[in-house]
Length: 255
Image 1 (spheres, rainbow, N blue to C red):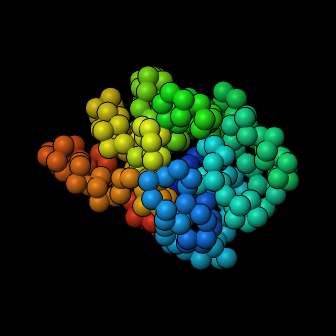
Image 2 (image 1 turned 135 degrees about the vertical axis):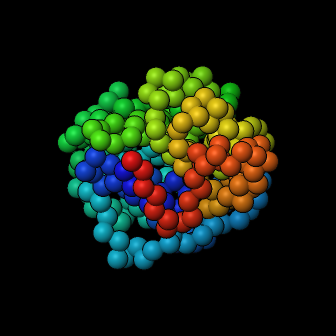
């Protein structure tokens, strides 16, 4: 598998013969307002895409983990061809159909596309009442012959069902949505550095791709913050080698 990180949770995944655009947020830099009730008033996205969107050949497949604007925005709605094979939560399928997408592929429990099996697993987008307000958020586990099992966490905190997903599927590669997204009040709604460390301790052999940083105003943890945290908490460089913190535009390859 290959994964090219573009920005925030947006990337291009090559897996089992499929090319899949993940969570497209395609708006130009600072063209959108700040996330409401955040701890700062900076406009979004914080950075430009690392490539020319006009020249990007969009994949036939797109996975949208959940329908929040930092994972599928108005620019994506307008830019994606309406015959894109759009993989999503069942809770979001009707909204995509109303947008005019004709090939919506909701994942109730699992979906097979060519030789790739995609399973939907639970996420928890925050804690307590905040999680209820944030709505349903899912993770996805990919499997195919001659590929490592891949787990895309989606927006979630570390909770019992996430730990169960790690134990059940034992993914070799994890795309972890970190960044410590947080409102002005309340607990984080995405993975914190401590959560990422918990994932590593739960499954030490997994390679963890850390994304969802440096792009949206309510994410408190930057790439540099995470690098310093890992250097402090994992003085053994071999343990730190389990973590990958890609720059925007960087491509990673895993066997």
